[in-house]
Length: 164
Image 1: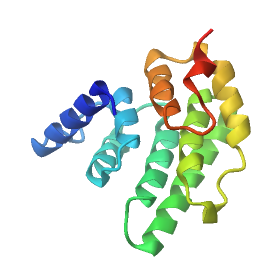
Image 2: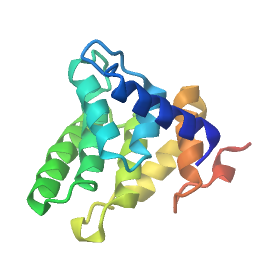
Image 3: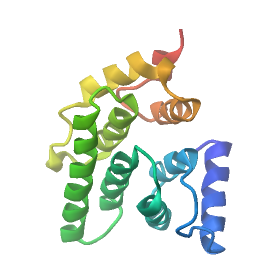
């Protein structure tokens, strides 16, 4: 984990401990990507609370990805399945509405690569990775940085894919 990611996670944890993660807290995309790359259930829950009141166009996709991430962190099997299904529905609906949105496809790729095989949630890995690679230059710097960080551990994305 690089310094920026560690710093962002520590900041998020500190803010949570101080009670700064309130309904009025603004959504921060770079913080979102730090949280989704973590395995901290409290940070995921905090980010979900922020998204509840956020007024952003990507809300459904981000909530969906976080719910599926949360499914991998909770202990109860029934809750895992329920969270995964709910998150899957939100993310897939966002993708249907905007199929060429590389950021949504990146969120799905993260989940696909890390979902247990028993879920059979890996059918779009190839198509998603291709769209991400082809759209990389048009994405915001925050999303590009998240992709570069994720590519260090991805099986289908490689940092060399993004250097020209």
